[in-house]
Image (cartoon, rainbow, N blue to C red; front, side, top):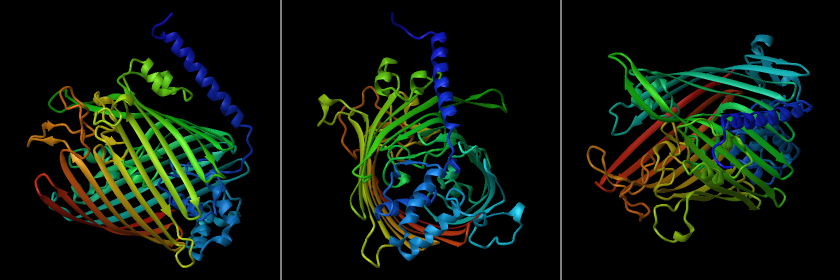
Length: 572
């Protein structure tokens, strides 16, 4: 007998999945780990430090920065391994290690004196190297902490499209996190921001631009929130949350799978690990296309299509953890309720997509990291959006794939060990991330989920980082990118679709043959410098300068842009 599942069968299958998760939670309750299991944000500097330690051969455990974030318990375990080999670190690296040992002092089992709670202990010792909290509670079965965050960032811009030069970003917020019973963790953070000076320049900041409130007429305010609950044991975890997810090798700003360009994703997740093997899964609720309806003279109704993303990844470590290989699948679908099949982590999504009548977007990806020598790491990503084996080697538009290759290098020669170098190249074929059904594009709320440059593009990235001390570092970088845009008229109508716009998939009548970087070619070079200095624990000064040269080759125009900023951040 064939046909669609009945509602009764779907409900029964859903109950089975819930039952399995409840059994997993019940087993988790038997764990006796003494650590916080809430997540460390994907943008935290600890991940760069751990990568540096891994490159030097100090960190030999199972660590990969390909898919973030990690929980505090796991991060603390990696820090503990570095502590055991701290004699191999430079003076600056040892100072940085000491700083992270303070931040993760509870998870490392260090004395209570390493932490200070203002509401409990007052302001005495506030400038000392201790982890500071507005409020902190600890006992044998629970730990709960609360912090406030204050930041201010004046900016100077010189770009031709906006006549103003000055803007500023101001933020106030807080966070609450904790672990109960050594197996259940939670975290909540919220920030309210204000844009001073030019509102248009303020929206050049992607964190501001992807918020909803800033788009309201004359609004200068924006807000951001993250949060999750997790249950974990030594085999893995289940979670429900809203977080920024980073996935892919290389710089996070241009990762192929999940870059830091897209908004936060609401998700339910499952992570498993056993010896050298690991498995990641999440089902996310993302924002589809918007449509507006004028209900009356004063009321505008916003309708947003239902849209979802399901992801799973299986991989393993090899050669004493010096190599990691993983394969992933991603499904983007919508305009209907949640598919139970895509909630099942242990199915081959591409076959499921076929069985559901080929209505959705399916992506397969491979990522690999290897460290053949101490101080050197090579990596690669391959993303297959669509492919026809009988048309490989041709210019058929349906052969949609992207790849990136690169390496990280840390000198092991005395006197240069505080340097770190990253060289990276990516290439994205025409029509990658697009779909003939607009709802299935690889975007979330109008923002690319993967590399923000989108299809029909490539780029080189070179970064040089120097650890000046345990509390300061400097980074120099240069990016060179090329992008082939669709050819349009003055009103934006497409005259020639070259597969260069993530918002426009292949249309009936478009050429079936594509040429890489065809269309209106834009070349961009970006050179910049960035520094960060921690004046005292949890009080930061950050600054940077960036020069951009952008060439529109189709109309022989060149634009030169300058950007400078300074930021003060206080976490208490």
